[in-house]
Amino acid sequence: MRVDEIRKICVLGCGSMGSQIALNAAIHGFAVKNMDIKEEMVARARAFAAEYLPGRVAKGRLTEAEAQGAARNLSFTTDLAEAAGDADFVIEAVLERLDLKRQVFRNLDRVAPPHAVLATNSSFIVSSRIAGVTGRPDKVVNMHFFNPALVMELVEVVQGPHTSDETAALTMDLARKMGKTPVLLRKEVYGFLVNRILAALVKEALWLAEMEVASVEDIDTAVTKALGHPMGPFRLMDLTGIDLHYDIAMERYRETGRAEDKPSPLVVEKITRGEFGRKTGKGWYSYAE
Ligand code: CAA
Image (cartoon, rainbow, N blue to C red; front, top):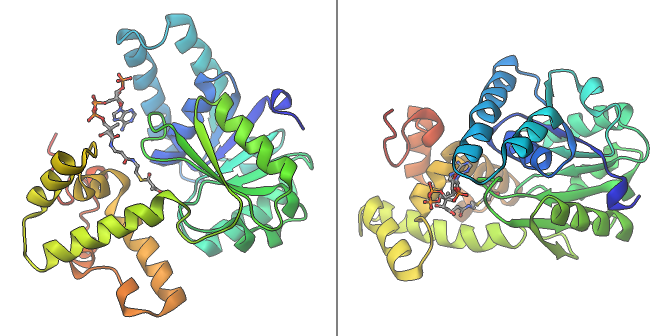
């Protein structure tokens, strides 16, 4: 399949990543079905698109016609067969749990057309841990977007040993057609490029906070003002979700059993309190309405 033969994209998961990937694809001219098993997640994604598109017009970033076209391109469902039944390319963005992803790919393989590529947006689960549950491992690949997916330009494409060169090249081309800058990883490696680098930064930041060397605010200020990052590691965790950070750390810890991979006690405290970041109104910072 060539990239100009991709017309229909299915995005699984209406969370912050899934909904923005879907909307981004719709803005770039693809017919997109965004699916979630939870009605309330679908409603939230629908409401986000309904608010975002007019906002882009008001800001002069999209024309009225472009926004209307994007809205027409985007539809929502809670039914997997309806979402993926006619898709040329599927991007899975469900929760970061390996057993869940394997179940989703098993079901997807049954309902998606044989030519469809099945990509996972996982931040750290390499597709070779998923491809085996499908009858098309050559068409299974990592396609990793960054948060907020409508804004961040990078997409990591990770070619597993099972992924064909054609699938990797097609995924790179699709990312470009979605307005992104893709990079290709020719080997599967834990954390890919960006999260390996980011994890080192976050680990140091958490250690400094845990040791009460400086406040969360001052550590963020140090990173923004000295290193030029748009936001510090704590504010970034609030954006991407402290729960996601915890899930990733726990999955890694289960795998390695190494004490240094355990989530920081400060993070565990946040999880216990249900303070996951922006989405709960409180994380390292407060986000009162
Ligand atoms: N959703 C959609 N668009 C958003 C947004 C959001 N949540 N937040 C900001 N934007 C858009 C704004 O609409 C604005 O767009 P225009 O300029 O085109 O009008 C633009 O982003 C800039 O926004 P603001 O001026 O309001 O704010 P800012 O300049 O502070 O930028 C930011 C906000 C883009 C989030 C910026 O702070 C940033 O780049 N932060 C770092 C984000 C980052 O590092 N992401 C990677 C996370 S790691 C990850 O994702 C890995 C993983 O596996 C989970």
